[in-house]
Image (tube, rainbow, N blue to C red; front, side, top):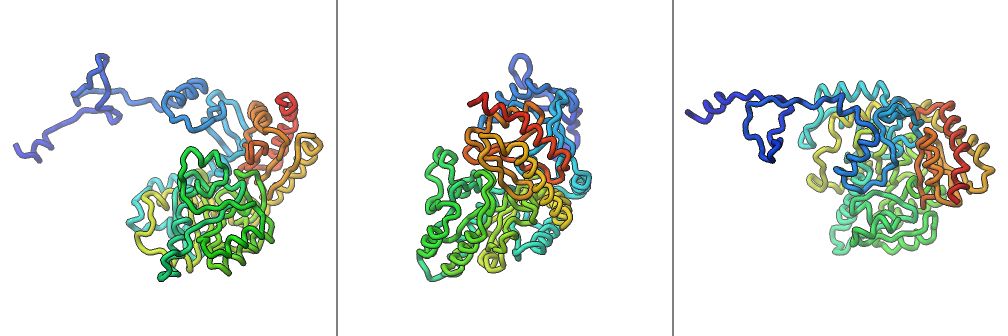
Length: 452
């Protein structure tokens, strides 16, 4: 019998969920394919209680996350729920990711429709949603071209590579082109090795040293120090967040960003704005740097862009793009039809001027509420931020307050040195929900005295 005939005569009666390596009671693997195996019950998988999920996570997941002791199983709008049905008001938005909240109907429609058409083919081919998303990003920014990635750290890695390639491209006869970088105190640019080297917190870097060399950290806002270092001619690019998120909700001044722009122009260095957290409507502007009237050579995006699906983007000018040739960089998954369709639905909503105006209005309302309710507390040093990116700086660790809020049904984050409460809710949050959040924060303030 030929191999083709043998193939056709081999009939299987196996459940689709059959695991061919499933061990029997005696430890042997069942080699028979003619068997019925019960498929997993999806409802059963979803019914696990919180304690069971937490116990199983400890058995099977690498322990790199210090998770809060809560299991989140569903969400709608700005509300999240655990398996037992407990409700939480979400003022974290998956770390500034879920800009349209949970289960936005247009987002769900875009994802499900695209999933039924085409999900992934790789960047070896052209796809329509990727081009359509790029057109929107370019048409609403300083940029001329886009490189898609899967995350913020990957977007910054691309910007690192593009910076060095650019310097070699414009100085072809220079055997030692500029290869160094400037980053700033309280910065966070990611956890992969290049982006990690640009991240200021030493405890993020030290376990993995040596990281990428050639990075100098300067004081955020120190104009003269930046000008002096840029002038030495060895700086390929300056990386800066117009508003620092992880670092504690610190905003740059217009004078600082203008000085960086001028110094980079004079020295031939590139200016990179990391708007992974502060970009795409979070501050009430489409891009945070628009408020300053200062524009970069590159901008990195990620968190909210696809509304919860993994995406990143490095936006560049034509001058930078001209240095990048086929094969200089790439990604298998980046810019897939599914993710880009989701991102188009997000971008179309957030880029609407009335939507951005609502973010600014709600941000002002929330800061006013917080100043009224929390401002008189001796532990509260400052309430700051733009739009719906707000920080409450304390004179001690914010963790007891964050824990107390969670126990009272409000999810918030920490930032800075652990002494800042970070509020980055979905941009669709209502004023009523913001008032509820402010009330819970006020009611939980005694947790700070108890911890002290």
